[in-house]
Length: 142
Length: 344
Image (tube, rainbow over all chains, first blue to last red; front, side, top):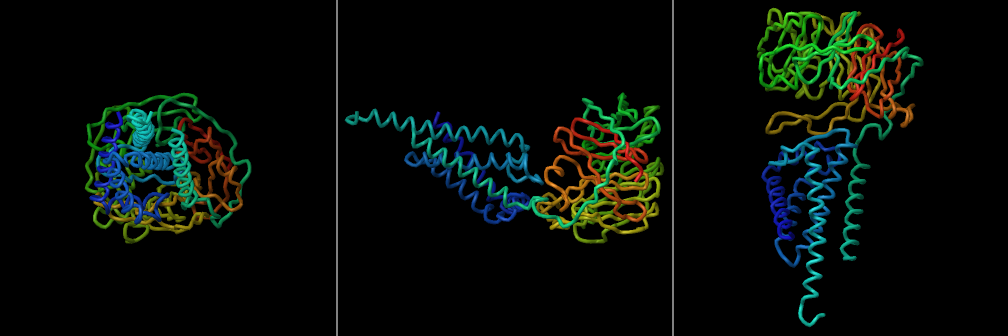
C-alpha cells in the first residue's frame, strides 16, 4: 500500500513540477491572476515546481521517504485550502494549472486534492507503522 | 505514533497560517475605504412578488403588458411569466444545430419574435415563436453579446481579434446588415477587456448606456451612436481599470480585476447599477446582507440616490432587468423577485 501511494505521489509531483517548468511563462501569468498570490507570482512560479520535484526525489529514497510524505501532506493541505478559499472567499477565480489537470474544474480539483491529502496522511501513518514493526522484528532488540 | 501526530498537527496549523496570511494580504474590494458615500433612499420598494422556480434562468430577456420573458441555458427555450410571477409557461422552438451557440448567447423577446445572438458561433437567429420558423444569419465579426432594443435593431459588443479594441456595432437582423460602429473608449490597447461592461437601453430617453465593470465609467449615446455624455458612477476604486495581457490562447486579464459595478438595468428614465463596492458610510453587516443599487438619471447620468435589495438566504443578486418603468426584475440563484419601485 505504501508503495502504491509513493508511486502515485512521485508521478504526481514529477508531472506537476515538469509541466509547470515547461509551461513556465503561462504558469507565471496564471498565478499573477490569482488574488492570493498575485504579488508572489514570480517567486512561486519558479519555487513551486522545484519543490514539487524535490519532494518526488525525497519519496524515491527509503530513508527519507517519510519526509517526502510529510512534505506531500503539507503541500496538498495548502493546495486544498487554497482551492477552497478561492471558491468561497476570492473575489476573482482564474485558472492556474497546466497539463491534464487544467481540464479539471475547480470543484473536481478540490476533490482530487482532498483525496491526495488523505493519501499523504495515510503515507505518513503507514510508514510510521511499518517502521515500528520493522524495529520490533529486528533480532536482539526485543 | 505520537511524534507523527504532533508533526501532522504542526503541519496543519502551518498550512492554515499560510492560507490565512494570504487571505489577509490580498487586495479584496471593501477591505479598505473606497472613498465615496451613498445617499440611501427610503421606501423605494413598494411591493415585491417572489417566486421559486425549478428552472435555471440566466436572465430576463423581454417584457410586454402581459408577460416577462426569461432565457436559460438552452437557446431554443424561453420561459414567460405574468408580472406577479404567479404562473410560468415554457415556449420551445427547434433551432438549427449550430456549433458553439450555447452557452454564450443572448436572447431578446419582442413577442412573437425571439432574437438569439451567439457570439462564439458568430450567428444571429430571428425566430417566430408562434409559427416556429427561424432565419439564421452568419456574421463576420466576433462579439460577446448583443442588445436587441427593438424588433429588427440590435447592437453588438464586438472585439477586434487583432487589436482587441472593443466596439459597439449596429446590426439589422432583417437585412443582415452591419451598420455604424462606436468605440466608446477609443483605441486603447486591449480596451475590450479593460473596459468590459454592460449595455442597456432606456426606452424613455431613447438612449443607450454603456457601464464599465472594472471602472466607474458610464457612456451614454443615442440611436445614431453619437455620444451624448460621459459620466461616472459614484464608486471609486484603487484599481480603476483591469490589466490585460497576451497568452498563447489570446488575451485575458493579467491581474485579478476588481469589479466596481456588477449589473446594469435601464428603464423609465433611470439607470440602476448594482454596485460591488461598499461606501464609507455603510456598515459591513448591512452591506453584506443586501445588494446596493445606485440610481442615476438616464438623461444626464446624475446620481439620484441608492437603495437596498435584500439578499435571499445570503444569495447575492445575479441579474437585474427593468420590465417597464418602476418594475425591477431581480434574478437570484433560486428565486426571482418582481419589485415595484416608487417613482424616482
